[in-house]
Amino acid sequence: MPDSAARPLPANLRPRTLMVRGGTWRSSHGETSEAIFMNSGYAYESAEAAEAAFVNAGSRFVYSRYASPTVNMFEERLRLVEGAEACRSTSSGMAAVFAALLCQLRAGDRVVSSRALFGSCHYIIAQLLPRYGVHSVFVDGRDLEEWRKALAPGARAVFCETPSNPTLELVDIRAVAELAHAAGARFIVDNVFATPFAHRPLELGADIVVYSTTKHIDGQGRSLGGAVLGSADFIAGELAPFLRHTGPALSPFNAWLLLKGLETFDLRVRQHVENAAALAAFLDAHPKVERVAYPGLPSHPQAGIAERQMKNGGSLIAFSVKGGKEAAFRFLNALRIIDLSNNLGDAKSLITHPATTTHQTLSPAERQMLAIGPALLRLSVGLEDVADLKEDLTRGLDAA
Image (cartoon, rainbow, N blue to C red; front, side, top):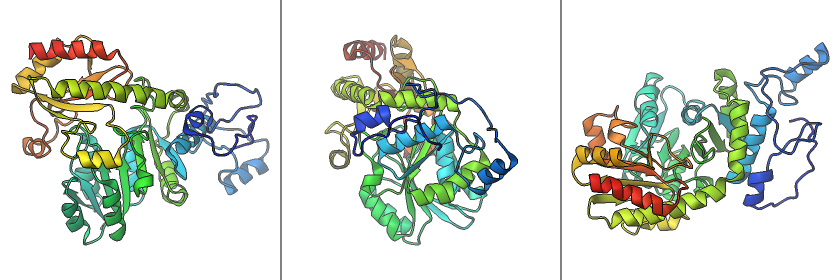
C-alpha cells in the first residue's frame, strides 16, 4: 500500500483500540473516517510506471479485483483482531470457504470434514469437490476416533464448523489440529458462530480461519463479505493467486461497511452473548421446549469442550419445541419482535426453521443423522432488551 497520511500507531495496542484504529490509511486529504475508493482501475503517470507496477507486483494498486485501499484497510484490521499473519477478503462467506479449499486442492487429494455443516458448505464438500477428483470423507465431528480413522490414510485438508450450523455441535480444535497435522493436512475452521471473542482457532492449532463477514462483523444486515486468515506463506502463495484469477473480490463499499462494523464488533458481541445466555436458560426451563443446545449451558452434551475451548457460549441457540413441525410453525408465526430470517449475527434477533430453509436440500436421512428435526429452530440473538425477547418467545410458545 502507498505511504499513508495517518500517523504510525504504537506497537502492542490492545484489541479494543485495534478494532477502531488498526489498518487505517489516509489519503492526502487527511480524512478521519476511512475513504471509499469506488474505482475499478488506476492511472499511471507514464508507460514506464505502468511496466514497473506489473513487474513489481504489490508496489502500487493496479486493479481493484486484485487490491484496493478500502479493502486492504479492512483486511489489515481484521488480521489484527484475529491475530493472524495475513488476511484476504472475498465477496461472500461461501466464496471464502470455496477459495480456502480450492486454492490448495488437486485431483486425487482427500478432504476430511465434520458432517455437521451449513447447507452450502456441505454442498461444496459433498458434491462440488468430487467433480474435480477430490475425495471427500465426512465424520462425526464430536468423535475423535472417527477423525483418527478418517485421517489415517492422510489428507490434504480438514474442515469443520464449531459450533456447527444449526445444531451447535462442537469440535475439539486442538485435538483435531494434532490429528490433521500428523496426516499432513491443513486444518480449516469456520469460526462464524463463535467469532474471535469465543475462541481464536489459530491459537488452538488451526491453520486457516474463514468467516462470513456478513454475520457479526458487519452485524447490521447491510453487506455480504467473507474473509480467509492464515499464514503469510499460504495467503500470498496459494490463496492470493486463486482470488486474483477467479475474481470473488469484495466491493470497496462493502469493505467500508465492514470497517465500520469492526469499530463496534466486541461491544455488540458482548451484548449478543449476554442476551443469548439469558434466553438459553429461559428456554431450557420452559415446559414447552423439548431440547436446548447452547454451548454456555451445563446441559450441552459437550459442555466440557465448551468450558475448555470457548470464552463464552456465543449468540446462537438451537432448540426444539414440543409438537413437531406444526407446533414450530405456530411458534414462528406468533412472534412479533424476532424476525423470521435465515441470516444470523444481526443487531436484530432472527430465527429460522433449518429443516425447511438452510438445510432443506439435505435428504430426510441426512437431516435425521444431523439431528435437524422437524421441530428444530435456530435463534440468532440480537441486541434488543432481553425482557422484550423473553416476552416474544413466551408469545410463540403459548401459540405452539
